[in-house]
Image 1 (spheres, rainbow, N blue to C red):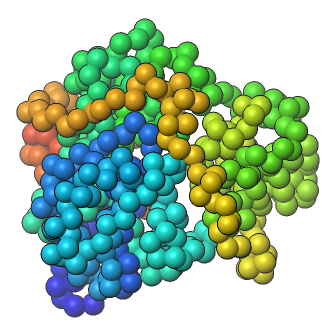
Image 2: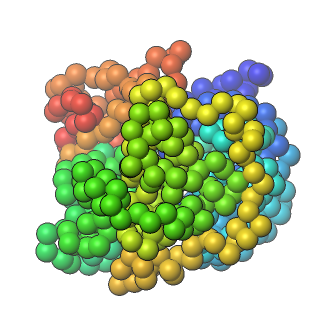
Image 3: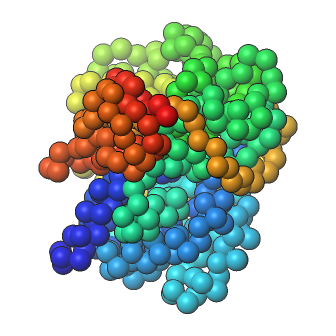
Length: 446
């Protein structure tokens, strides 16, 4: 590693850059490698979200600077900007700049889950990431486009203190904007004119893989891409909040092994040993049989296609797979290398015909009323109070470096991870005084 490479990687770490698309993997670690492909993920996997689109439109120069930094750090031979058809106009607007830089563009159809890095790596490089592996395993690095913008800022000494976020659903005005990290969900919803339904709840992160919360005091993290407000009795909310006892009992009695959950599983049709219908069988098993059957869940990516789209009985194979994976972890069990080699297959020949159109998701999930533009709105507004999470990245959580009553400035480090551990510092996102330090993070009040 050259001194220049080491310096830039340290700048990226010191700036607190982590995956902004939801994973939260520390970016400095990902870029400490030599690869053939760098892929900018602007596909925006989750329906309704538009923060990736708007971040590219708002900061194109920083986006290209970030890509050039990645190219230099990794010695990549090919850099590709990947978007969905819905953002094809963004890619077209960047075409001249991309050609000058020697970058390629790749447009995927408006299907779910096109933003899955396993799919993008396969489509762009023709390589299958090994089961349970990462893009680096096949000479690729994939980063979300907002992360790439943050890389450019980090090289200029600017830490991550803001987050692009889409606020949509049952709100007065759907919008995409930038808010300080740690802003409450309640403040974000107020920026969108407030809820338009009684008893609202929020999907955090996305309609397919996101969670559900009614606690609007929760903060925006570096990884949160969207807040989707829905009525508490909406179909999606009911499905996502079903108890384990309920979905297990219903699955035990109602699954007829039609295997549609497997046939439409995006990872299965890409060749991976994941078969949700076989995991559903384990609801009738105990002991060693249950443990062995649970192995068919090991490589589930939790995309929710099986539960929310495929199953004609509206059962919940995804949650059953999540429970099965927990059982495997508890018993420290997994497939052997020989098993994986025998079960890993080429991509299914009719894979394209089994991808899920976004329009189908909107219809099936009752989201058509919320399918509207969420254009970027610039605001000078700042919250009176933020709570900055210390543990939203993969690796060791940051330990507070401040104490209650201290005054801090925006951009100042308020939490650190030991240099020998995987992780990144976190920074104050507003000027103010530290009013509390707890499990949720560091609270700063203006």
